[in-house]
Length: 175
Image 1 (tube, rainbow, N blue to C red):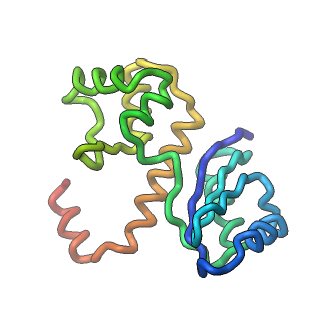
Image 2 (cartoon, rainbow, N blue to C red):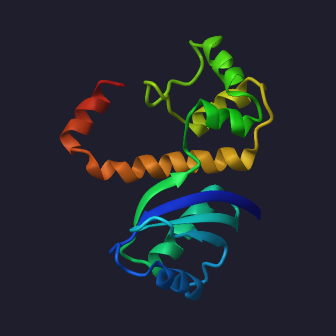
Image 3 (spheres, rainbow, N blue to C red):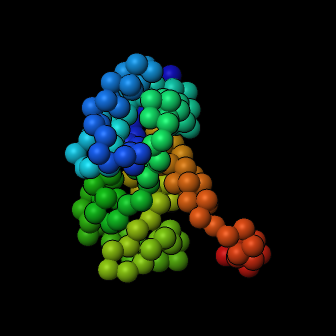
């Protein structure tokens, strides 16, 4: 069994409800391995270090625990997943400038950001996989497993907003 570290952020059913009541319910369902953040009205965040055989198993069981204690809670985000250059640098233990240079020197092969603009964003798993393939930095395999699982979860969560006919046409374009 391995220890997986990740965060889950949820919206609460009613912002006026007392979040400490949810914390008590979490303990009652056996979810005692999370630090709980309740600082923002209508939101609750969980920082887990959960033992499991895979990141998928750890994250799925955490979500099931949370939904058992707070059935109306809606997942906002699982992290780590989306990262910018500074986040990547921190994770890899180097400077932002070093990561920018790495990106600029490898424009053809460096992972394509999911958002380009003043701030660029990537899925962490894409970056870690790219770095691992090139043996540039030591990569934590548990972090890569968590990042890959969270990417899948966050994308799957957003599919409820898709128009099925549009999705079919977009997929047919082979984007």
